[in-house]
Length: 458
Image (cartoon, rainbow, N blue to C red; front, side, top):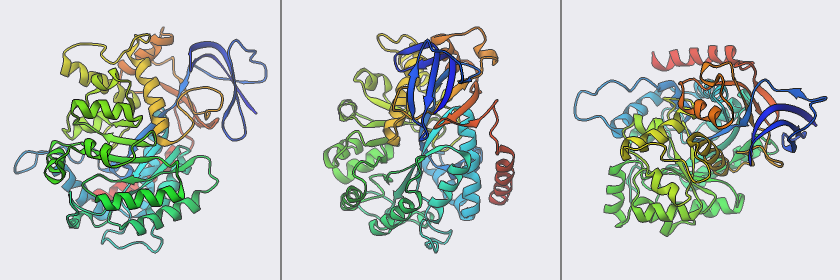
């Protein structure tokens, strides 16, 4: 056992004092004891809260953050014009660059308080669209980056076969993404073999979107997954853009979330990423399904997507988590803040995502997003209780935003005061990955990242 002692810790049933954490060799909390004796335990240097799972990441996009903020020369900029820039950026991305960018991103995530990440990975082939000698080359580079950084990873190989609804042919810009079901499952099998026995790596699956897979391909892929891993997480982009909703209506006569709920076995295993544009009935049905809504407020704002109906969804006990997606921001506090602020701007009222019994908005948001994120990643995490992974964050109470604050006031200040997460130390599976605000390998990882970015943007 590894023993830790915190004078203050936010447990599953609220704040507690003098808490002793016993962590077994697998990185699982074997005992959580309030009002305990600190003898023989490592004393933690601040209040302890559960780490935040990041449920949606496209790692390579960290290197292009900030490069798409100039107005285009013709027409109105949108998600669709941003996507064309993204396709062009991929022309230079190779395995070494991807690994370097992902490692840098994952260090940034850890320093911000994310302790796990779901990597929605759709770049499979070389810049000409040819499979690598090892078809899982780029997936395995992501795994290497996660291992080096020490973050917990749920890897999601993405099935991407078409450019639009009804099986339209892919465009040239999508050549690096395209696989038939059988070849995608070959990649899945290769990653499964390479990560078997690694407690920090979980393997799931992601059909990219309803526009990128046909109903037959979706059914075939889900059947293949069921044979391999019947409990694996399943993620899908859905209803992110108004045009996507309109195109789905033209193709099927139904809205995207409506179609998915009617034609796929949506359950607690599923994460519906974005789900921005929902009807009232879709909101109700998504909440009732037990699936997680994967919300990425900073990316959704950056791309001009729209606002998820969080107030109506929360009123029906819908589950959600947050992700940094395109990584224009790598901060769980900013995702949670903008989740609440978007609703305040829309409804012109305050403290909208609090709930009865939890008047602290930040407490409710962190608790719900940590639980929803853990569910979406398929990991035993999200709170500090026996049987959960020892993934935790020690807050920096010397940060001016947290001075003099305690308990719910501490969380409210963490989320709503300042832009830098007030994180001192971070542990994943009871192993320190950030100490005193620094990652042990951050200088070397940043140097590799700098070299990669200079090549990519030259």
